[in-house]
Length: 302
Image (cartoon, rainbow, N blue to C red; front, side):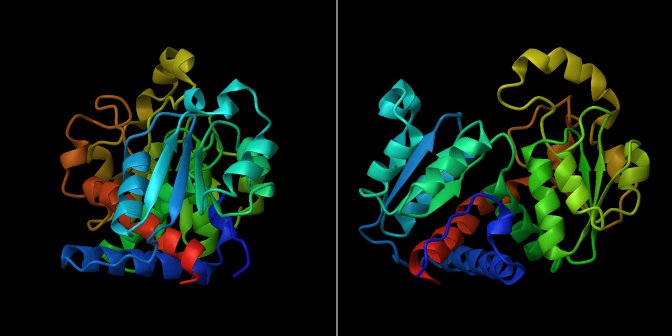
């Protein structure tokens, strides 16, 4: 099997993405039946995390354990990367010792450099530009609850961040309409918008954007590394909170998602996570199953 990396959703074809979504659903069902399946026995996944994590770390470590493999968690203080070893050198060495490498970092270019010098699959566990693993879980969750997302209207409310950029890629691959509603100055990547103008457009007024939506998604207003902008962002995003009132403008069967952690009282109202439209807890759990499907795809040619 040729070496494959997963740095953005665009590293997959539409058919491959749908295959992983369906496989994640199957793996979830089999796990709940108590069936043991260990395709990665004696395989090792390295986790290089320069950003803190709960769901991403636990889901990858649990997934490898359930697949019969193991994982190594490496923070900057634990490795020579944190002391200035060139990325190229670390990639060459680590990829001779493990079977796959998952990286959570800041600059997307750093991830690309590492992948270019790795002899094993490299997985993007989040960069400042993209968060494709979360989109695998989000698309699996929608598919479980409502079937195909093709032709549906998805609304992104809030900052045009790495999650928003990944939703743009998903809209392109899975053929759904994406409306981004955010204040001026907080748009997603401009080149992505231009490339996918047939699928994505911006609507400044959240009420107009959410009207007739099939899925509404949001994220925190200040991501990791933007803490010094917190107060300015609170002011800019005041009118972009997702609440039951805003959701009432969406279709009756619309779903609500948030990648977590959530700041209640900011990007969502205090009661939004428990709203009848919310599938946030399924979405969080599906990080485990979708990533297991991804690991199987990359390492077993499944």
